[in-house]
Length: 513
Image (spheres, rainbow, N blue to C red):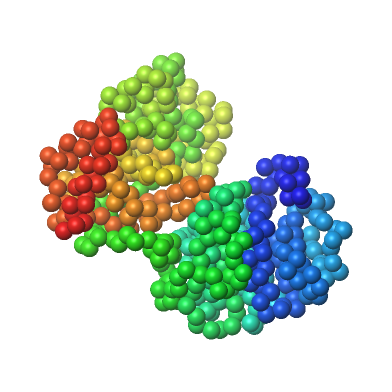
């Protein structure tokens, strides 16, 4: 009841400012069971919130006399805490756990930390060196705050103590996660990972995909248990999370410098990467689209171009939004159609700054303050965009379900809504074959191994993720004829479903050899 009341009376903006999303009761109970295994005398919750973990601990052990300490930075949340049922064993500090210099250690830690980038934390430059000294490890300054919470909490865990932490799944694949994974594995702390498959049912308010880490500071080198939770009902059936797991994986199979998501997902997948495949970077490289720093200024519609009197010498064709391309094949005819619908498919590309109309528009931009934004003020002059050539293959940055792959037959460049694939000498003559591989179900499954997963089934890819993905070798691509590929491309202009089926047939020919 407290949660629904709090959410009802608190703005989304406020909750986002503090990175708040609340833990479902069955998940909190699972975590509480873990930390209570060895009857801890002291427990800490570094992000107390509305006290769900304290409530579950007291529900499981009604007469428990362990000292429970909580930290909560949001003073607004205190008015919603259940003071009537609060025991004398609870002490809550209205302060930031990361700034707490209490020099205490605890028998158990349980936490659902805030989900914010550490760069957004104003006092980070003072806090980070203190925490690094405390844990004896270097921590990336661009970490998610949840990772900083985890590292600090682990350092304050007593010998043989237990820790249960909710973490964003993305840290398994990110650069900042490397040091966190190193801490978890080199000290044999990580004992179990709980993965939620039907996440939206279990965490309806989460803005990122999450997992639960279960740790114990016992210095024992155990295989890590992997638990897969399919539904809320699944959670209610678990009597002891320590005994409920589906797979085990050795510490040596989870190296800190590797992405863990594909390793973990492969435990539950029957698909095997086909023999002989090579990295996509063998054929070229993916790079992000053009970052203008002020898309509303740089992107131009037909009506606006005519009204401003900007000549063609100072603009260029440009895909500014992912939604502008709805088919896997993008032709000049498609571009003209979008342009005539008055969509912003041109970009300011100043070649003649002495032009009167251009000078007026630049002045307008400066009056609006576009020249003072982060990216624009780094450029000289501020209105000059990156020099790019059109990419033959465009790849969706954010995707739900199928990954958006586009064969670009226009001379349009693109903003950051798409990543661009630029072939090298090995890939220049294989562009169409690479495209149908990426369009096929097999290609999509292999590419998605390197995805970063966020909330609501939203997947994100970085250029580096794509460059490391696998594709058929040159020899394998020779099994597909140019005629077959061209036929698929023609069909894809009007019938994506049939083109996918035909692509599947050709790629299966490769993988079955």
